[in-house]
Amino acid sequence: VTLGKDDITGRKPEEISRLGLGRSYQKTNIFLPFTVWDNVHLAAQSRAPHVARWVSRASAFAQTRERTERAIELAGLLSRRDAVAGTISHGDQRQLEIAMTLATDPQVLLLDEPLAGMGTAEAERMVELLLRLKPQHAIMLVEHDMEAVFALADHLTVMVNGQVIASGTPADIRAAAGVQAAYLGEEH
Image (tube, rainbow, N blue to C red):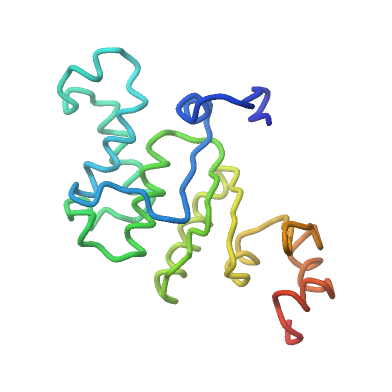
């Protein structure tokens, strides 16, 4: 497995992250008792350049604070920055997880079902967020919301029972008989 020119096969997750891969999981992975800002700041702090980052006051690192603020803004959470993570909506928690990923300055985002469990309005906000991130980040997405996938993807690979049944542009996938039968229905 390569990331850019780096062979990442068998590397530790933290090494892969430092090489520019950010990942969010299907199950939201945040610190519920911490504020939005604290969650993102912890992620940003993982990129502090010196060993003293673990024994010095976190607030002493201007670059870490700037990375935190930038990630919160990119994720659309400025108005929620001081909210306790466990009290915000599921959609905001998913955006928080992406903000935490963005705070590590990834080149590539691996997102496992970022719209899972969301209502229509939250899903639309997530799609808008991912569209804003798309020009600066390669995004690999596992998602079952096909309308969101069609809105976001340049290239799709569709699988059924672990087997690839189609691969191509959104238009190719919409037209593929096997995909229609398996996922989309006849109206697409």
